[in-house]
Image (cartoon, rainbow, N blue to C red; front, side, top):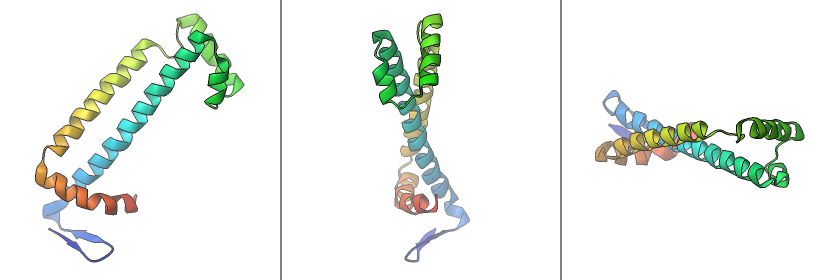
Length: 124
């Protein structure tokens, strides 16, 4: 059971799964966003190198040394970020989204977690 006392929720042990669900959903949202951002960045870098548009890399705030390293990887391996990295990220995204769906399919826990998420976010 949880009790709202104005600025804080006190959750007894019987509702610890609600807090765990809230933290899990928050973690999954952040992790999915992080992997998506990484995936998009790697694709943009590969595309920029294929097109020979180094100004795009500079616009992404890469240092000249890092741009040189990316160019070297591109010349030696065909892409700065190989296809297996992109596949691994896609696989990770599918796994994270499956976990997210499995958590949201628990209606009671999800509703309670949604109520607690603002409080959990304040704690973090």
